[in-house]
Length: 135
Image 1: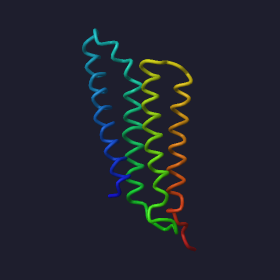
Image 2: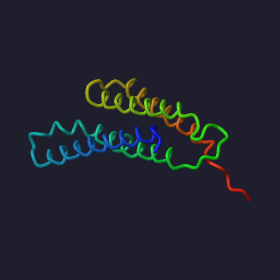
Image 3: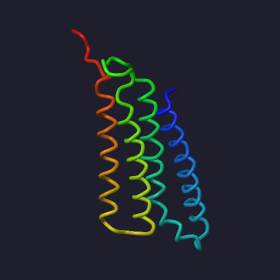
Image 4: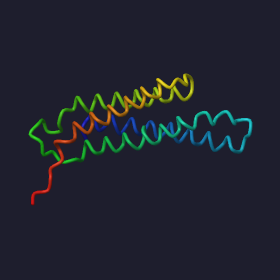
């Protein structure tokens, strides 16, 4: 497995652990009314599981498993993948900061922009590896 895939998958596994832990706290808070403040973590829980776990796992496995049809280096421009990894995780952390400590709309917008840039970089890196069907 390429190093970039390893980093994507391991990061995704960390988000799975964190996201399910937050989910467990949310479920416990339903039984303990004094823990009602834990529901402030709901946005972080969703962010960790949807973007952190699911999207990064898909990106890591896609980078590893997609065919290598391009004339570029065997897996494309990996620097775009590393940038995507950095941008997506920075976006997740900014979203969590905006949800918990700094509810500024600019932080939410910046988080979304960083995640969008990460996806664009990843698609740009993977695009040459997709070959059209020969008719």
